[in-house]
Length: 247
Image (cartoon, rainbow, N blue to C red; front, side, top):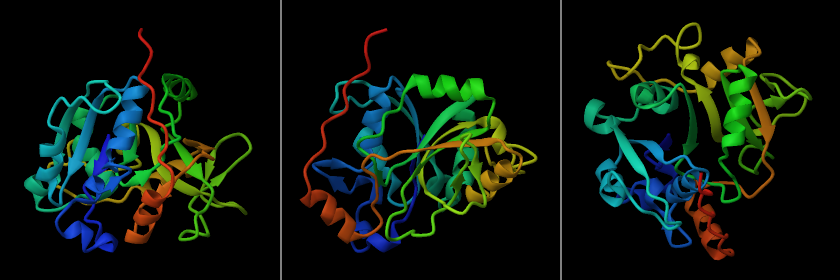
């Protein structure tokens, strides 16, 4: 699932006429970078949630786009703005999309630039074997989040409290069971359109030792302001992700 429903208030006026995930970094929309990286890892069935100017997202990519690395994708859209008049926040949006997702699935934000990240089947296999409900990738704390979000234990558990915390990259692997009681009380499919943040659900699962994590040390930017967008575009363009090997 690629999250693309945010309003992007801090990116105004750029986002007054363009949804934030379609703002371009090195010649292509922000959200296209994780989409291509997922395809390069062999994950070609995507769900994209939308709200603000969401029709621009679906018009840009359609249902079966062939993106820059040559791998065709199949995209289903969860149109929160059309269905409920607004975005449902991260957990609310994921629960809304659950009928379109598998038992285990990736989630990545469409407004975060992480060109070095690789979505691999090996990571999925390790996660499935672990029995955990979520696996998160954390990053060193940027200037705008100096205190971080979660700790990381030596055994790979994600921690609510720790002397050192890292920032949640927004990239994670999840089981559908995380979005059910006792962690989440929203019915599958979120038929009433309830808004719900993700962090409280993750923290509840961390308290039961059900969330693992690891540190991603590659390039990573939360493209939250026009200045960060300008800085990214002023820097060197990263290499394109390679297509998945034939199976």
